[in-house]
Length: 395
Image (cartoon, rainbow, N blue to C red; front, side, top):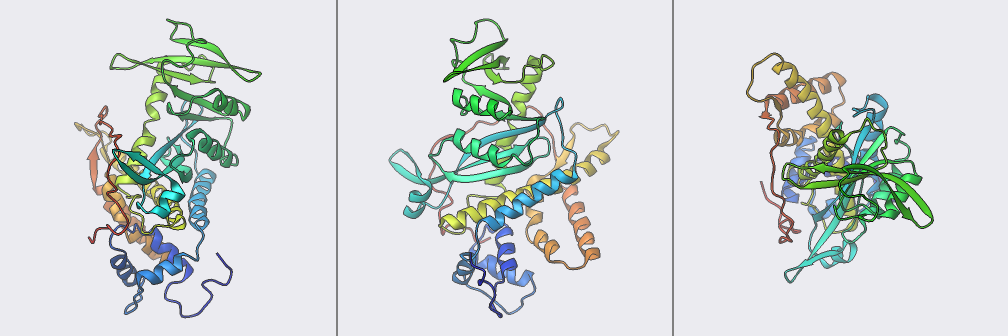
């Protein structure tokens, strides 16, 4: 926050140590985590209070954690060939409402959800998710009442330096509007948007499952494509897209429609495995710091999982198995606790490589079967603030 911060000699928490502590999956009692962290970084006999840590973190901008997150993304795209579907890199953009401490300060900052006589502090997270590589590439945390489309536009604008003409963005049915379609077309964004089946009836002819339509926004005529996707339930889904290439047929769009679901499972990882909602403070600065730290950790876990899955796939080759297996994400994220920090602070390259190899071996041994076609009922009710400030577990 100021160039003079963290310059005093003898401080118990340096700038890098404060960053590392926030990155270390802080989910238990804050004082227990601090005590364990000091032991981990070999500062025997030293302790710092929760108040001391809170004072240290106030000196750090949330942008520090956003920079770490952005650096991993930029490095990945500079050094790796991206997965492509019919020549396109696939991205999903979606938003999710998360719980934060139910304080008046945070209700004023991020807004609140209301229902059943309750008013509970909530925030909205919105991300660009690389489907093929299982990575978050951009993210924003904002008011729960903000427009999903407005935040999506902000995300796409921030992605310009990494975007190409061969990117295809998938959206859920909270996004369709003539204004949003016009923005996407103006900025040469390839898109597929899931749309309520009763939208744009005046422009769509009955009984034709795949057709080119025209929609108007102000004085602009937009030439788009409407595709009806039959589902196993007997219902249809309507997709609106600017992909007019006929090599994209209905089965291809149906496959794309289901690929978008992976961002939902990624949000499940953030909420239930990384436990993003267990914030350790109740200020806007704290929430933003830990949000970007969680995205950084999620991407580090994805990179490790990719390497582990390659090992597992090679091990399964030519074996007659009832199920194929993949890395257990829960075990993987648990294994990153402390070990990621140890890898970062280890000065010896040789020891660091050995530590990483041991971590990779541990992770790939813990496997779960892949069961295609599993479905889970989604709960959309307004629940109590189960992760309220001060209610953090001690284990």
